[in-house]
Length: 484
Image (cartoon, rainbow, N blue to C red; front, side, top):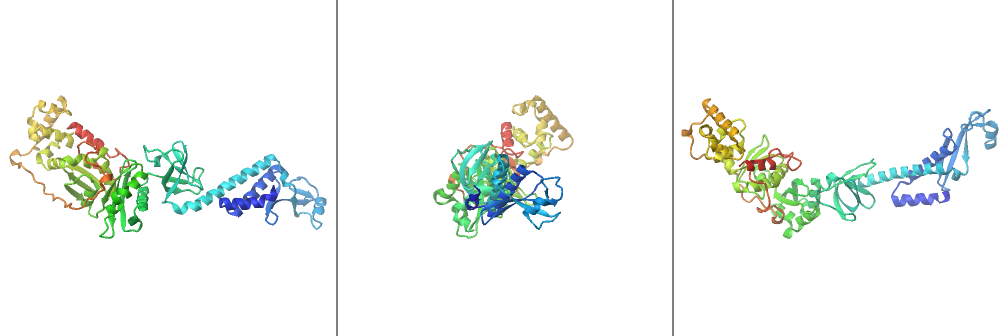
């Protein structure tokens, strides 16, 4: 009943948080659309809400004429004088139309649709205003339902969407589960959910640590860098503004309690916490933990680092499918080349370098040839095919090609003077001092017993976005190991 309209408007405005004026405008527009549908589209109709009586009043305006040709837009002078004795020809006469309740079923349905549309628009605006300043916060809700891979989360006042690409892979939630996520975007106009969540964003990890570690919230401990492969492993670099506060220990907490709370929220994602350093050499030593780095050679102009590790630490430095070095590269924002001490020593050897002169011979193949005590192109030119075909990667045809290519290099003067090659070639590169730089949470970093990548050198690019993206990372390491 229209007599209850004022009470309904007040209740909806209070319960849903709508601007009262928006509701009134929606009702006026809806009734106007319904009146046009019932009475004719050409009629000049005006709808007003009477605040005093809580009623919607409908007026139609027609021009006063002698002879009426269009009843919807014109009224005769005689009929107009009955309504207003002072009216004159050519005037626009407004007339209140009674019984708007009798607009008809179709017209009433149109009014209902307009009101629903307007209320949805108003609600979207309310939600936008409510959440626009919370972008970047962690929100909590209940898993409502699933829609084509997307997760719909009930935040109480409204729903948010967690797209498939922002869900942690291989981890599942069930309907009714409580979930926390990072509020990534708030859209003003959207047919889909206005709020977009993420659990894979690096900032989600930062926010979780900020919530768990008071020293981070107070600004004593700062998070200097984060790199993640969501659901699998993450690295976080921290520093302290106070010398008596250990940033790693603060993040780990008593018996690992703080970091374990974050790990549980991320459903088992392993987290390496490492000290940040302004020195790239020391920083890469920390970032490649739990592997130990023997030496780091820094090229600041190219932003690349050559990290040399003990032979038995190479697999640990690379990590499973190149994951450890890839995360370290993203953490630094530099390109990291990881080589074993043996490979690095080989690269310093003139004979080994001569093998690389042969077209098609890369380090992995050179390693295999070198392992057969064929230490330079001179020796390779004198070798028999049988000396090479015992290697799995070389067949008779390729063996012959290598021997002939080596002979051609020697004949062209590209060989080496074997009498001048010293027995031991010492590297002139100084070892980077790395004392007391690595402190990692024992419970949340890889152990040496972890399943990691087989031995082989690797290059990690910080721009790589997923496992296997780097051309020389885990897959390359596997191929090199197979050849060896």
